[in-house]
Image 1 (cartoon, rainbow, N blue to C red):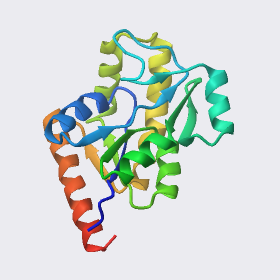
Image 2: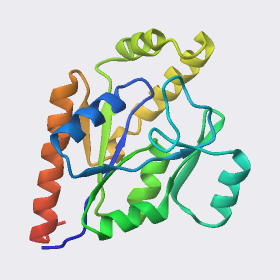
Image 3: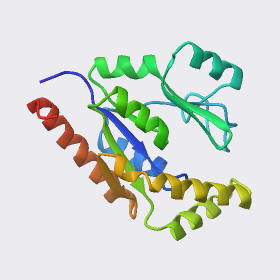
Image 4: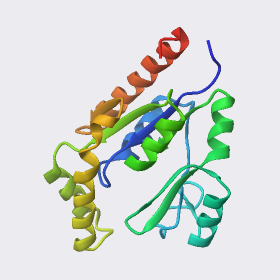
Length: 194
């Protein structure tokens, strides 16, 4: 059995509840490590640098791109987002499971580089529910919400590129399903059937 950790990649449209599902999943699996992404967007109210994201300038981000310091990166709705490579690789080598919360293009970059990664697309129960969640959040102007909904439709159309699709109709149920998928992936990797 390999002592290497499992890389878990979860993508979902903005407002689908990834953060809530992750919080529940981390309560269930205390050895799961969340990889903090870097971004050039401004922090939302309550977000802390180094905990929710590493908030960096566009110049620093572009320097890191040139230095090949990201496992994946993308520009999304006018801002860069990326996964710093070194920290993820070190955690996997030390046997920790690592959870990446990234968008579709980034997930496909990771899947091509890390074929053993478990990829999960988290779906909203419906587009109407997603619009309600985005509007209720109240962090963006109506035109930004509409842009996010259009992007969500595009992202959802790519869900079949993932190993699994999980509907976030209820946070505990969705987290339990992802936890089960992690166990199944570990069993397959241990048996050498992946």
